[in-house]
Image 1 (tube, rainbow, N blue to C red):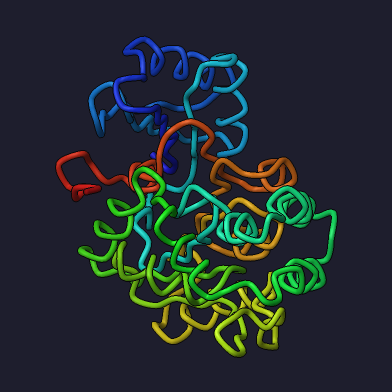
Image 2: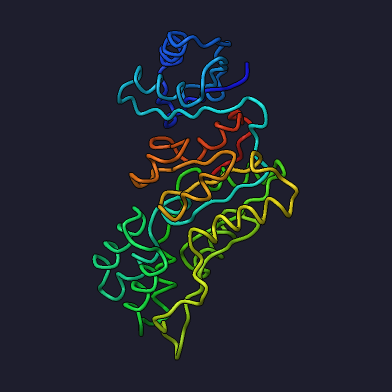
Length: 298
Protein backbone atom coordinates (compact mmCIF):
# COMPACT_ATOMS: atom_id res chain seq x y z
CA UNK A 1 0.00 0.00 0.00
CA UNK A 2 1.36 3.43 -0.92
CA UNK A 3 -0.11 5.48 1.94
CA UNK A 4 -1.15 5.18 5.57
CA UNK A 5 -3.96 6.88 7.48
CA UNK A 6 -3.09 7.00 11.19
CA UNK A 7 -5.88 7.52 13.71
CA UNK A 8 -4.83 8.69 17.17
CA UNK A 9 -6.87 9.47 20.27
CA UNK A 10 -6.05 10.27 23.88
CA UNK A 11 -5.05 7.06 25.74
CA UNK A 12 -7.92 4.59 25.78
CA UNK A 13 -10.11 6.86 23.67
CA UNK A 14 -10.07 5.16 20.26
CA UNK A 15 -13.11 2.87 19.84
CA UNK A 16 -12.38 -0.49 18.22
CA UNK A 17 -15.21 0.20 15.76
CA UNK A 18 -13.66 3.39 14.37
CA UNK A 19 -11.11 1.77 12.03
CA UNK A 20 -13.98 -0.07 10.31
CA UNK A 21 -15.86 3.19 9.92
CA UNK A 22 -12.77 4.80 8.42
CA UNK A 23 -12.19 1.88 6.05
CA UNK A 24 -15.77 2.08 4.81
CA UNK A 25 -15.36 5.82 4.16
CA UNK A 26 -12.14 5.30 2.18
CA UNK A 27 -13.54 2.33 0.26
CA UNK A 28 -16.52 4.43 -0.81
CA UNK A 29 -14.03 6.75 -2.56
CA UNK A 30 -12.36 3.87 -4.42
CA UNK A 31 -9.34 3.26 -2.19
CA UNK A 32 -7.56 -0.08 -2.00
CA UNK A 33 -7.21 -1.03 1.66
CA UNK A 34 -4.87 -3.10 3.78
CA UNK A 35 -5.55 -4.61 7.19
CA UNK A 36 -5.68 -2.28 10.22
CA UNK A 37 -2.44 -2.31 12.22
CA UNK A 38 -2.79 -1.27 15.88
CA UNK A 39 0.18 0.73 17.11
CA UNK A 40 -1.24 1.17 20.61
CA UNK A 41 -4.35 -0.52 21.93
CA UNK A 42 -7.36 1.82 22.01
CA UNK A 43 -5.07 4.74 21.15
CA UNK A 44 -3.48 4.54 17.68
CA UNK A 45 -4.01 2.49 14.53
CA UNK A 46 -2.60 2.53 10.99
CA UNK A 47 -4.91 2.01 8.01
CA UNK A 48 -2.87 1.29 4.85
CA UNK A 49 -4.45 2.46 1.59
CA UNK A 50 -3.71 3.37 -2.01
CA UNK A 51 -5.48 4.92 -5.01
CA UNK A 52 -6.61 7.89 -2.91
CA UNK A 53 -5.03 11.27 -2.14
CA UNK A 54 -3.95 11.57 1.53
CA UNK A 55 -5.97 14.71 2.14
CA UNK A 56 -9.03 13.08 0.61
CA UNK A 57 -8.55 10.18 3.01
CA UNK A 58 -8.41 12.51 6.03
CA UNK A 59 -11.46 14.44 4.82
CA UNK A 60 -13.41 11.22 4.27
CA UNK A 61 -12.62 10.05 7.78
CA UNK A 62 -13.64 13.35 9.33
CA UNK A 63 -16.97 13.28 7.50
CA UNK A 64 -17.62 9.74 8.71
CA UNK A 65 -16.43 10.27 12.28
CA UNK A 66 -18.22 13.56 12.86
CA UNK A 67 -17.02 15.25 16.05
CA UNK A 68 -15.31 12.18 17.50
CA UNK A 69 -12.21 13.36 19.44
CA UNK A 70 -9.80 11.48 17.20
CA UNK A 71 -6.94 12.90 15.11
CA UNK A 72 -6.22 11.65 11.58
CA UNK A 73 -2.91 12.05 9.74
CA UNK A 74 -2.25 10.59 6.30
CA UNK A 75 0.96 10.33 4.30
CA UNK A 76 3.26 8.11 2.25
CA UNK A 77 4.02 4.67 3.65
CA UNK A 78 7.70 5.04 2.75
CA UNK A 79 10.00 7.33 4.69
CA UNK A 80 7.62 7.79 7.60
CA UNK A 81 10.30 8.02 10.28
CA UNK A 82 11.92 11.43 10.21
CA UNK A 83 15.56 12.24 10.92
CA UNK A 84 15.05 15.87 11.92
CA UNK A 85 12.47 17.40 14.27
CA UNK A 86 11.95 21.18 14.50
CA UNK A 87 9.51 22.16 17.24
CA UNK A 88 8.01 25.43 18.37
CA UNK A 89 8.12 25.90 22.15
CA UNK A 90 5.27 28.04 23.51
CA UNK A 91 1.88 26.27 23.47
CA UNK A 92 3.56 23.36 21.69
CA UNK A 93 6.33 21.84 23.78
CA UNK A 94 5.25 23.78 26.87
CA UNK A 95 1.65 24.41 27.82
CA UNK A 96 1.91 28.19 28.20
CA UNK A 97 3.02 31.33 26.37
CA UNK A 98 6.09 32.18 28.45
CA UNK A 99 6.11 35.87 27.49
CA UNK A 100 2.49 36.24 28.61
CA UNK A 101 3.29 34.54 31.91
CA UNK A 102 6.34 36.76 32.38
CA UNK A 103 4.16 39.82 31.78
CA UNK A 104 1.96 38.74 34.70
CA UNK A 105 4.77 39.81 37.05
CA UNK A 106 4.49 43.31 35.63
CA UNK A 107 0.68 43.28 35.97
CA UNK A 108 0.36 43.28 32.18
CA UNK A 109 -0.63 39.72 31.33
CA UNK A 110 -3.99 40.53 29.70
CA UNK A 111 -2.58 43.31 27.51
CA UNK A 112 0.43 41.25 26.42
CA UNK A 113 -1.64 38.09 25.90
CA UNK A 114 -3.99 39.94 23.53
CA UNK A 115 -1.05 41.02 21.38
CA UNK A 116 0.26 37.46 21.47
CA UNK A 117 -3.11 36.08 20.41
CA UNK A 118 -3.34 38.40 17.42
CA UNK A 119 0.27 37.78 16.41
CA UNK A 120 -0.07 33.99 16.60
CA UNK A 121 -3.21 34.15 14.47
CA UNK A 122 -1.41 36.14 11.79
CA UNK A 123 -3.18 39.44 12.47
CA UNK A 124 0.01 41.33 13.43
CA UNK A 125 3.59 41.36 12.15
CA UNK A 126 5.49 39.02 14.45
CA UNK A 127 8.64 41.11 14.89
CA UNK A 128 6.72 44.33 15.56
CA UNK A 129 4.43 42.54 18.00
CA UNK A 130 7.39 41.03 19.84
CA UNK A 131 9.11 44.39 20.23
CA UNK A 132 5.85 45.97 21.41
CA UNK A 133 5.41 43.34 24.11
CA UNK A 134 9.03 43.35 25.28
CA UNK A 135 9.18 47.15 25.70
CA UNK A 136 6.23 46.89 28.08
CA UNK A 137 8.42 44.83 30.41
CA UNK A 138 11.24 47.36 30.71
CA UNK A 139 12.50 47.48 34.30
CA UNK A 140 11.03 44.12 35.33
CA UNK A 141 13.47 42.45 37.77
CA UNK A 142 15.27 39.42 36.40
CA UNK A 143 13.97 37.18 39.17
CA UNK A 144 10.62 37.31 37.34
CA UNK A 145 12.23 35.09 34.70
CA UNK A 146 13.05 32.45 37.30
CA UNK A 147 9.56 32.72 38.79
CA UNK A 148 8.03 32.25 35.34
CA UNK A 149 10.21 29.23 34.68
CA UNK A 150 9.08 27.58 37.90
CA UNK A 151 5.50 27.80 36.64
CA UNK A 152 6.28 26.49 33.13
CA UNK A 153 5.12 22.94 32.37
CA UNK A 154 5.84 20.55 29.52
CA UNK A 155 3.08 19.52 27.18
CA UNK A 156 2.06 15.87 27.68
CA UNK A 157 4.14 13.69 25.38
CA UNK A 158 6.90 16.27 24.86
CA UNK A 159 9.66 14.26 26.51
CA UNK A 160 8.46 11.03 24.91
CA UNK A 161 8.55 12.64 21.46
CA UNK A 162 12.06 14.05 21.77
CA UNK A 163 13.58 11.13 23.67
CA UNK A 164 12.17 8.54 21.26
CA UNK A 165 13.20 10.34 18.08
CA UNK A 166 16.65 11.08 19.51
CA UNK A 167 17.09 7.43 20.48
CA UNK A 168 16.45 6.51 16.85
CA UNK A 169 19.09 8.92 15.55
CA UNK A 170 17.05 12.03 14.80
CA UNK A 171 18.32 15.54 15.52
CA UNK A 172 15.73 17.38 17.60
CA UNK A 173 15.76 21.18 17.74
CA UNK A 174 13.63 23.90 19.31
CA UNK A 175 12.86 26.87 17.05
CA UNK A 176 11.01 29.46 19.10
CA UNK A 177 9.92 33.05 18.80
CA UNK A 178 10.38 33.09 22.57
CA UNK A 179 13.58 33.56 24.51
CA UNK A 180 16.83 31.71 25.11
CA UNK A 181 16.29 31.90 28.88
CA UNK A 182 13.41 29.44 28.46
CA UNK A 183 14.45 27.49 25.36
CA UNK A 184 17.76 26.50 26.93
CA UNK A 185 15.99 25.07 29.97
CA UNK A 186 13.30 23.33 27.92
CA UNK A 187 15.93 21.87 25.60
CA UNK A 188 17.81 20.41 28.57
CA UNK A 189 14.65 19.11 30.20
CA UNK A 190 13.36 17.36 27.06
CA UNK A 191 16.64 16.36 25.44
CA UNK A 192 16.65 18.65 22.40
CA UNK A 193 20.07 18.71 20.73
CA UNK A 194 19.87 22.42 19.93
CA UNK A 195 17.67 25.45 20.50
CA UNK A 196 17.18 28.61 18.47
CA UNK A 197 15.26 31.67 19.70
CA UNK A 198 15.43 35.33 20.71
CA UNK A 199 17.53 36.94 23.43
CA UNK A 200 16.05 39.32 25.99
CA UNK A 201 18.46 42.15 26.79
CA UNK A 202 19.19 43.16 30.37
CA UNK A 203 20.58 46.18 32.21
CA UNK A 204 21.24 46.77 35.90
CA UNK A 205 19.55 43.57 37.03
CA UNK A 206 16.34 44.17 35.10
CA UNK A 207 14.92 43.73 31.62
CA UNK A 208 16.03 46.46 29.26
CA UNK A 209 12.77 46.40 27.29
CA UNK A 210 14.56 45.32 24.13
CA UNK A 211 15.40 42.12 22.32
CA UNK A 212 18.57 41.33 20.40
CA UNK A 213 18.38 41.78 16.64
CA UNK A 214 17.69 40.21 14.25
CA UNK A 215 14.39 38.87 15.51
CA UNK A 216 14.04 35.08 15.30
CA UNK A 217 10.79 35.02 13.33
CA UNK A 218 8.86 32.96 10.79
CA UNK A 219 11.62 33.24 8.17
CA UNK A 220 14.28 32.34 10.72
CA UNK A 221 12.38 29.21 11.71
CA UNK A 222 12.21 28.12 8.08
CA UNK A 223 15.89 28.95 7.59
CA UNK A 224 16.78 26.85 10.65
CA UNK A 225 14.83 23.89 9.26
CA UNK A 226 16.50 24.10 5.85
CA UNK A 227 19.98 24.68 7.32
CA UNK A 228 19.82 21.78 9.76
CA UNK A 229 18.51 19.49 7.02
CA UNK A 230 21.25 20.57 4.61
CA UNK A 231 23.97 20.09 7.24
CA UNK A 232 22.80 16.50 7.66
CA UNK A 233 22.29 15.82 3.97
CA UNK A 234 18.57 15.29 4.49
CA UNK A 235 15.81 15.93 1.97
CA UNK A 236 12.80 17.87 3.25
CA UNK A 237 10.81 14.64 3.12
CA UNK A 238 12.93 13.40 6.07
CA UNK A 239 11.94 16.32 8.32
CA UNK A 240 9.15 16.96 10.81
CA UNK A 241 8.02 20.40 12.01
CA UNK A 242 5.37 21.14 14.63
CA UNK A 243 3.89 24.37 15.96
CA UNK A 244 0.72 26.26 16.71
CA UNK A 245 1.15 29.87 15.58
CA UNK A 246 1.32 31.86 12.35
CA UNK A 247 5.09 32.21 12.70
CA UNK A 248 5.30 28.40 12.40
CA UNK A 249 3.46 28.18 9.07
CA UNK A 250 6.50 28.42 6.81
CA UNK A 251 8.40 25.61 8.51
CA UNK A 252 5.26 23.48 8.81
CA UNK A 253 4.61 23.93 5.10
CA UNK A 254 8.18 23.06 4.10
CA UNK A 255 8.70 19.95 6.25
CA UNK A 256 8.02 16.48 5.00
CA UNK A 257 5.57 16.09 7.88
CA UNK A 258 4.27 19.45 9.08
CA UNK A 259 1.88 19.32 12.00
CA UNK A 260 -0.36 22.01 13.47
CA UNK A 261 -0.58 21.07 17.15
CA UNK A 262 -3.68 22.38 18.98
CA UNK A 263 -3.14 25.32 16.71
CA UNK A 264 -4.59 28.74 16.06
CA UNK A 265 -7.36 28.71 13.40
CA UNK A 266 -5.19 30.14 10.60
CA UNK A 267 -2.56 27.45 11.21
CA UNK A 268 -4.97 24.55 11.60
CA UNK A 269 -6.66 25.51 8.34
CA UNK A 270 -3.41 25.70 6.36
CA UNK A 271 -1.46 22.69 7.67
CA UNK A 272 -1.58 19.36 5.88
CA UNK A 273 -1.65 17.54 9.23
CA UNK A 274 -3.15 18.59 12.55
CA UNK A 275 -3.44 17.21 16.07
CA UNK A 276 -6.31 18.61 18.11
CA UNK A 277 -7.02 15.88 20.67
CA UNK A 278 -4.09 13.54 21.34
CA UNK A 279 -0.84 14.48 23.06
CA UNK A 280 2.52 14.94 21.34
CA UNK A 281 3.06 11.18 21.09
CA UNK A 282 0.67 11.44 18.13
CA UNK A 283 3.67 12.65 16.12
CA UNK A 284 5.41 9.36 16.90
CA UNK A 285 2.40 7.26 15.89
CA UNK A 286 2.19 9.29 12.66
CA UNK A 287 5.74 8.07 11.95
CA UNK A 288 4.76 4.46 12.58
CA UNK A 289 6.27 4.05 16.04
CA UNK A 290 4.60 1.39 18.16
CA UNK A 291 3.78 1.81 21.84
CA UNK A 292 6.64 -0.46 23.08
CA UNK A 293 9.15 1.65 21.15
CA UNK A 294 8.07 4.94 22.74
CA UNK A 295 10.19 6.04 25.68
CA UNK A 296 8.60 7.24 28.88
CA UNK A 297 7.36 10.80 29.14
CA UNK A 298 8.53 11.19 32.75
